[in-house]
Length: 302
Ligand code: ADP
Ligand code: MG
Image (cartoon, rainbow, N blue to C red; front, side, top):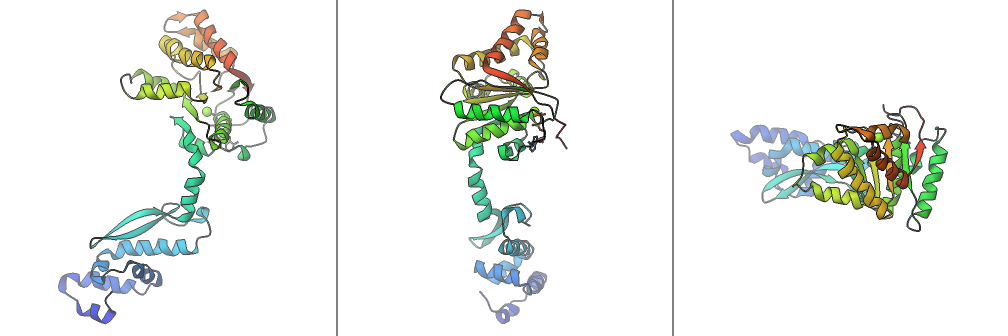
């Protein structure tokens, strides 16, 4: 690197501003320390003063940082970092050591396929559950029984119903996360969107996804009953998935705003009119696959 005195001699009309600006920034210790790590000629450095300044700020934050949660950088867990390449400096966001550990720690979440469910649900955890609902203990007891029995015998999933926002999806997602840690795959499928997407997608790779969902070890059909139900969706899609999972003893969970009794009507009446037997058949499959629970609690959506 050039010494300050040599550097000063390089002044030329075009570079003057760049250089002045750069020299000013050299007063900042963090800036100096950062550029010292780069080992690059100052004529090059001064073209990147503002980006380097940004990096230096983040670099200083990182040095004092006690944990990922306390990160003060622009993008949590990442540092805006310079890289010297062929007489050029490029900048990119690089994960810090805390972030790298965090990414390793949450790797298990990849075992849960989310289909049109808010990504945030993947953070659901049994140890963070609210404990203020009357019937939550009963549900947790069932989770325990399910977890202990899984793989040894067929245990029904849950048909969990209750009002909008009371935490149904969260509960099942928390259970699936526990299984994900043991490398057992699951899927959470938002049913209304799944059926809509399926309808408009034949011939695409959607069939692969459909197949995956049908066969995945643990499945949550989320918000069943909220879909716009066609006879095709009921008989060919839902009916087929449920039948397959019954035949293969694959645990299947459901959440809904409607109780099983209420949802029977929904499955009975489609554009084909009233088809009691077809509606009944779906209910019987759900009954075979799951045990009904009501969740009563206040709305948790903020
Ligand atoms: P539902 O499926 O019954 O409509 P959700 O499971 O989507 O409700 O929950 C509503 C909101 O409350 C979500 O943002 C979810 O993350 C949050 N939530 C629900 N239960 C819990 C819980 N036990 N701990 C923390 N957050 C929760
Ligand atoms: Mg839900």
